[in-house]
Length: 247
Image (cartoon, rainbow, N blue to C red; front, side, top):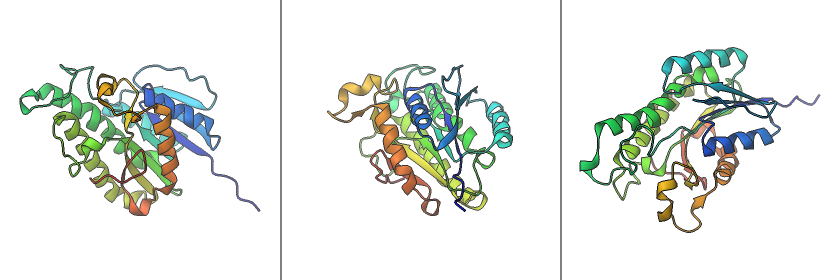
């Protein structure tokens, strides 16, 4: 008798941004996902029968814990993608990332850590409740090449670099523990390239021709590479080409 196909469920965290919306669109067009759940800070009315949306502030540790308990009862996920991140804007006193040591401001640094590190961490902590245990699964967190300590050749961007590097370390450390608790889970730190969204908007004039990607393109790239990322060699720090980035 032919085995029934596994019905997959996905969770998109930060679904209101440009990349988040592209991820939702991709997954809802993929018939192998029978449910797609989305989380953001504001209300959203998904115009799709297979999409369920929840208003959750990912900076609220208790709110993330509460919704994770609900998901544990409703059904676990085979794929989670967290695309939360901030480079400029809300809560930061200057638009441009720091170019000099003297430009570092403690309030800005706190904000960077809140959004780029602590908000994803609130979800990383809940992965044992969220992920399937008996099937291969992936939990993807959008990071950045500038979070690589080894690859840092240009300096600057202190707050953004430090908080993405911290996120990478959390993922690398969590994988060690989760190899025992969720042995089929692959944690993925993903550098999407420079994507045409509000995050990169002030800096797009410096991007080389052909290197400013649409959200749809970088999502397609990510989804194409995921099947090759196995738990035995996790965690994975890759770019949009599928190439490994040194931690």
